[in-house]
Length: 261
Image (tube, rainbow, N blue to C red; front, side, top):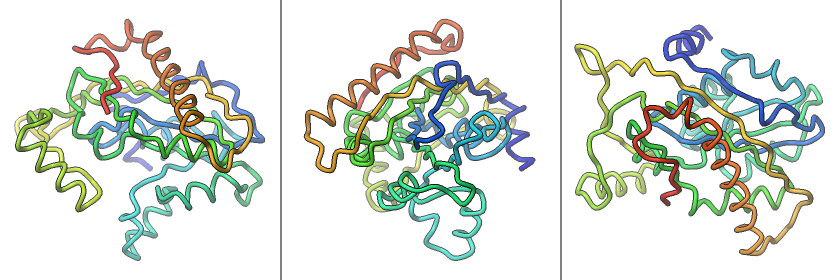
């Protein structure tokens, strides 16, 4: 779509696959996207659209982006999201895609914005605060399906919009968390740039794909220790991606990569 091509050129948005050049064509992958940011522009441009030719980069994989269930609750809206290539983020939908091939014989791989609504509330310029410690379900599903994980870290994603101060413990953050529980999506109060303070900052967004974190065999009932071990390997690869690219791509960062929740 022209909109995503325009977004690619505006910021610009790019993707680096050096650490994930060779994905097994016979296997599915769960691709974890970090951080959520306000909108997840890097995720939409790089994985949901063909603006950066993702299907040519990984021709053996049919990559789908998981999004909130609410987008599939209304008939016309639901069909629009399906046409764009989104799938529901509920467990059964993701599991279904990971365990079957699409009509063209390719394996499905699913992009999940792991930090979700909570992480969006921490999307402040100059930060890379990830909601990952509590996301045990992401790792449990990977173990249950025997699906290897590919962590992705996007530099610049949090720099697109400014967000009104909503530090932990403030009335605003408490209200936002309460609303998130009701609506399942968060409501960050943001402002942009330009005369109307609504334009996103024209800042580069670079998505770095990490090395696959291998899951060898399905485990029907993974233990807490097995989940933790996979989580720690995944976080270590995210940290390795950050350390490798922070000097070049993290010049605007005020804080290092942090796993805050």
